[in-house]
Image 1 (spheres, rainbow, N blue to C red):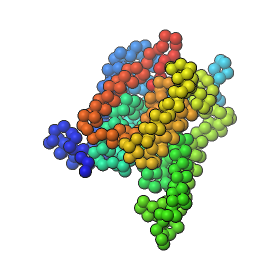
Image 2 (tube, rainbow, N blue to C red):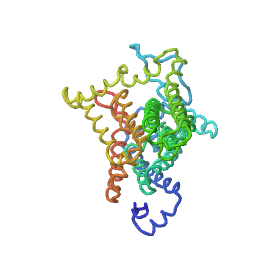
Image 3 (cartoon, helix red, strand yellow):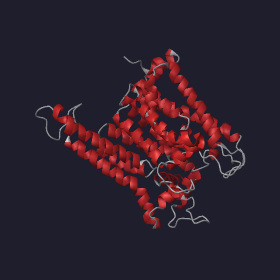
Length: 421
């Protein structure tokens, strides 16, 4: 029998009392504690922030966490999206707000109008509340596969992850993770119809719709195989065609609902690029805007090979993406990760595949790994040792210091440009 969370907390008296608290209070306290630690790191780094494009040197905490893309989201909230794409002097598309999906700015704008707050503080509040909501839903998702104590440790790893500090800044990541976790929870519970509106909102928060649609489609194929290939041998005599039994093959209604979710996911994933096309008249408005930051056209897979050759040379560089993909596949097949279930492993595989196809690897890649949060539960399942779990938490916190000081604190490179977080 697995040990409870209270047996792994220092101090038996405190552990006994903490174990009696409701789950939502435990999760909230874990998340708030992690964000306080991140706030302390932010404040320390802000003291050493020099001249930067946004504020005077050594800005305050609230100004410091609002740099980088926070101003882009505020611009989208205040001014919307251009009907004509801005161009650089060479005719290429300039950086603009079409790269920043509308749901998060809209919520910030709404809160600003209701409260009288300025846009950036309103966006920060939305992000903080969404981050807390994400932690609560992540716990419920982890409880589908693990006992309460292990699920709580999974939340600890999620909240302390090296780039988790982004969950308290005016970025869309916290909102997207809340909606993604909710959608995955509904899929795990086979509530496909209820997942549809959640997926639509998720696809309007950040570009996670394509990998989610891929996951839904592959999972649909798997479920059809279970029903029509294995189901003949597993279906008890006399069961209705649309019925279902625990552990048996999926019923017709369930497959129809999953097919509907797949179609909705595909449509929702294409919604934002289509809106950009309709508004600007440019079919490639969204992709041209996204690639404005990288300075070249979107060519699937190519940036990974270019980066690999730059880092490891012409021979190893070509092999590096394949080696990385192979190692990730081995991770997904490891016993602790297999324990998180087919749906979550499939999501992780599809999302990593999406990054390999479309991402231009750079320093912001670390932040883009947050949707792989189900692997935090796999890390918690790897060992129940207090020493192991405590070491991972401390290591994540130390790496968070590195991320904030190295990437969030702005510094111009000698040849121009910067390292984006």
